[in-house]
Length: 398
Image (cartoon, rainbow, N blue to C red):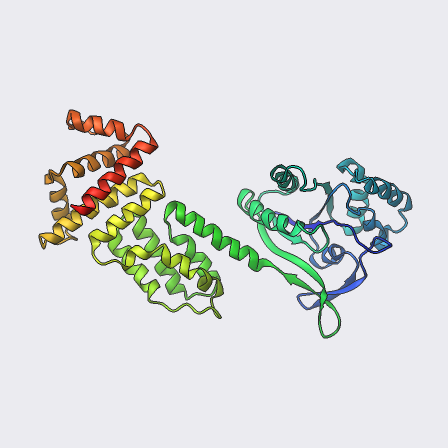
């Protein structure tokens, strides 16, 4: 596992094509440099560095801005000619790559990526592919977005998520040297922008939850945000019980969450997303086990989790009927007996679908009509959704 520092190349607007020499402060440590990545290399001592730029980026300025390379006049002139024609390719940068590696005491990659001008999707993918080719699974990544084109920070943010998911990279930090933002001593602050990544983690968690309904994905994020561990545990337990179709216990743990106070000042991200999370757990506010189970059936049908949708609908109908009879809803034998003796056609058809999905094959004691209904329901996704939606609606109203 290596530490990789990724930095972006732009075009300094000064006459000498250099960034002004500046004293930066990173985590209370001050250092002077023109190119922030050179200072970061000394402070962080990465195993490798990746310089990302376009065919017209001021690659030659890396030579003039590094004291150890200022004697490389011929290489600088060569690069200036190529970049002025906006025609730089990776092969042209190999000599620069070698010089930088010797001075920075680490492996260096200089890579050209396209502008986002003609095919934004393809060109964005090219940017990500370029990074993935020089990063290994599990690497620690620091992203420097100080010097680059204006849209490079957005690409870097996407890259952070991409590398985290595809290569399981550890994104240590996204850094920005804010030249305008000064300390009392007149030094420029190097800002950590990791909060953006954490927000994207929450957005990703919501997307994941909408797909599979597992609350446990929020537990770790809430804990990281400073929420009491006991409350994080309640969320994790709620997810476990709901996904094992135990709506009673799931509701109990969700109720604890809903009754808790989330303060923005102490747990900002949990507070920020509490509305979205509350919206996705509305079913737990409804009274009655049967009503809860039918709501869950509808939710899982929306997510395309057809087996859980069928199970919750089946259990919802059992719960509502037993409740009407004043029977014990939580007695397994009573519930099992009802399921076996129930002659409601829609319930029988739903049970056939559930068994076929659970076992991968239809039951052997079905009627011809039942077999035909099952065959039609399992013919396609559209037919299955239509059948389940109809059975849920009918049984819910029965």
